[in-house]
Length: 145
Image (cartoon, rainbow, N blue to C red; front, side, top):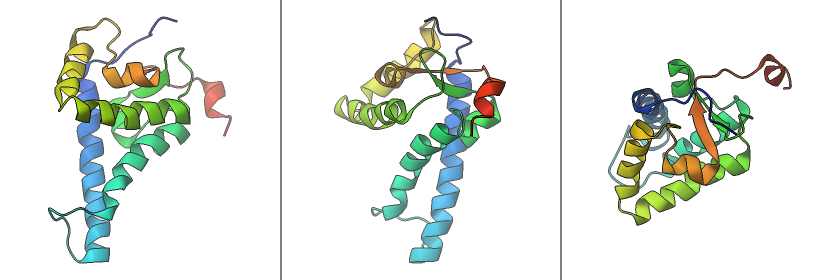
């Protein structure tokens, strides 16, 4: 199926920045309450909250995160349907592994792919069988829950 209305680099980056700020503030506040420090250089058990956020929120909110909703974009399967847990796990977890193995080079390649490819799909989109679109969910999809 053809990718419809794909989102380019700057909107995707904007959504990631909004999500990063949100997760930084939320985990910082929780960390300050639990550990007495807003942030530190050591491992924090709350670091996984951002990963859960990027997997669970789009699963239950038609492919949106807060940042994606603010920029008017969402994640969908390659066929245009709502993403499932398998797509999101592959997109987030496996892609983290790929980007780490390539020492960040894969992330740079992904940025160029989003900027230069006609379908605007990055490595993590190919891994997860997804793409990011401007198209809102259909009305029938929104009434299912």
